[in-house]
Amino acid sequence: MKAIIPYTNLYCVNVGNFLNTWVYKDENLCFLVDPGPSSTTKLLKKNLEQLKIGNNDLEYIFLTHVHIDHAGGAGKLLSSFPNSKIICHPNGIKHLINPKKLWEGSLRVLGKAAEIYGKIEPVPEDRIQFQETIYNGSIKVVETPGHSPHHQSYLFKDILFVGEACGHSYSSEKINFIRPATPPIFDYDVYLSSLQNLINLDLNDFKICFPHFGMRDNASLMIKIAHDQIQTWLKVINSLYDIRKRSNFMELLFAELLRVDKIYSNLRLLDKEIQSREPFIMRQSIAGIIGYIEKKRKYASSR
Image (cartoon, rainbow, N blue to C red; front, side, top):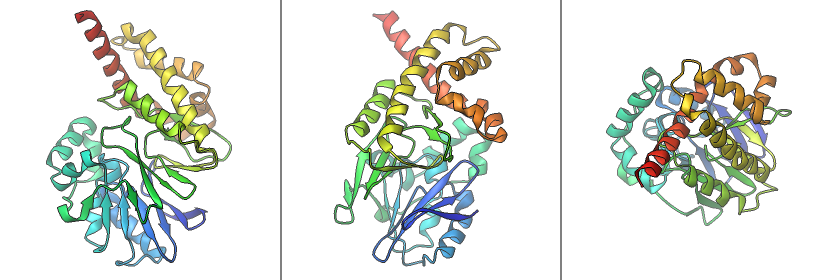
């Protein structure tokens, strides 16, 4: 696990094959965004030591949302940083103070993957809070509940820490790739509205930092791509919805998405390892959209 410097005072710390933590450090301020799961906390701490971040230096731990792969290690990390405060969406705070339901839900949805991520240690109530603006207003929270009802993004200087509001990317200078992050329970209208809120901020000159994965220029462009993409995915999945129980449904859907979504089709240009695991990873996003379509159809038929 190695820290790299893609931008002034900003560090990208890998905490897994498909997740990074963003760490900012200057002479006045030190924070990180999404510490990752508890299974990688030890490695994260080692990287923070390499960045010469002492136990009393880390001021803030910003959570984009409380899913186990992003926030599961927050409580464990706090034990090493006594001055740190966690900033979290109000809907997520209770789940970290008492993570029993969060852990049970993670096991139910992720199965053995949740066990690999590791158990979620509770966060002391006096060390977690919600703030709309942080550090004298230099860091602003943008509510982006499309990926989950406890999701928020952060604006700092000319950087947007977007969480999964725009989906998943891959770190590549030459290839644009985004996939929607729409796990169950998914609401298309909320997801689209969250993206529209970001579009309205006019972030052309901002860099966008993904936890899955890497940094890109022109945040507005990436947000617009994600906005158009989710509409395409809903249309494609809706068109194939009636054959969803066929054994080859996922194979047909995968091929169709690669055909009609030019950004998603860039998957073919990425590493073979990424390509091989993509059909498995995309299933959660597909499940969320299918659940949304099913709910809308049931509602329409009941009227």
